[in-house]
Image (cartoon, rainbow, N blue to C red; front, top):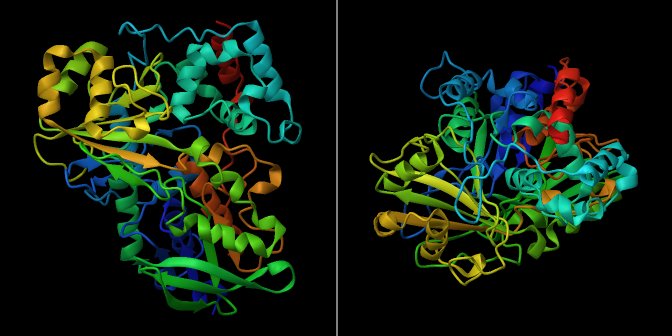
Length: 530
């Protein structure tokens, strides 16, 4: 019997990296589905790709973050989703549905940036001067080893951070000035094709619903139908490694409800793939009358597992670099659940975008740096009739607002709504909006952790040199040239792990390099010089 037929594979974490790994194991490596087991500490799969009823007394719906896809960059993701059928029609793949929906609802933001006087800014001019362009060119030209762990603001003068380009780029990807200059360089190179459409985000592709309903649920159903088992409520607290330099994983230590729940012993032909860290670990929720807690003591196991296993070998990474400064990595999002269309209709009238065809709308002078996006309705597969949703976030939660004299971190959902209404200026409908809206706020201590300043060795390789039966997955592994905070990164990590350990005779789709296309390179240059 081939090793792939008798191997048991344990996937630690139920996020997109593990779900993709399970699919590649079954689809490409020939591992029987019943031999694949996913261990997830929460009651639902999908990790940071969520969309669900709000877990608060007020109810409503919530997504913690926005996820946007792109044709050019997401090559591994499309490779996966083109073989996963939708829930509604087994003859239509998830990839086909996203493509069709994006044609039906093309993204073309008409109000990407809003001025302080509530007029819509002309965001088509990026505002870069000669020094900004020279600094950007220098960053792009320097090898990563010379950039090292320096900050973004080590490479640019103050003027750069006042430009429309930076405002749009940072709010699209959630960059802060203290984040890694290497990660900014990688994003510039990966998304250079977005330079001349950053003001409309017309390169964005979306699913019919939120990412959980559009991507995770069909993928999970496909896996379940093939015998893959997901054990919920299970935390992997630690892992034992053996052999010289800890090159074999021999045992997983499990917990349930905070108590020891036995171990999993890995046989000679068994494997374990471990997702490291989590951008949504220790998420806390608030509602109209409550404030979400900022959790600082690592209550969920995502970071504790990595901290524990990192002690085994120097090439297992340094988690503290990413999770050791919550004040630099936190940010807050919010979801409005509305029993009236009045706010969506007024935003449509103001922007010229119907729901689902706009993009991030940012008040560029707001103290919180507030942004919202109005998705196509319904945004949740089981969304109640005559109910509507809107999602938003702010990157500066520790300063007072412009209309609410409190830090966003200290605001209730009702106060966040007041700040939003103050920026919108729709005073004639404000009372109706307040009366018909429930707000769910979401505080995420590690939402920006992927972008923290780092050295080359701070993230482990997907498959450390000589690793016999294990791999690391997710947003905190090192994949040269690729960019974190994308679903593509998690899926590529899964593909690398499976194809390596199971000798899959298929090519991993090459990364998209926009600058290798003369037309894209010229278009980006022309836009940057405008």
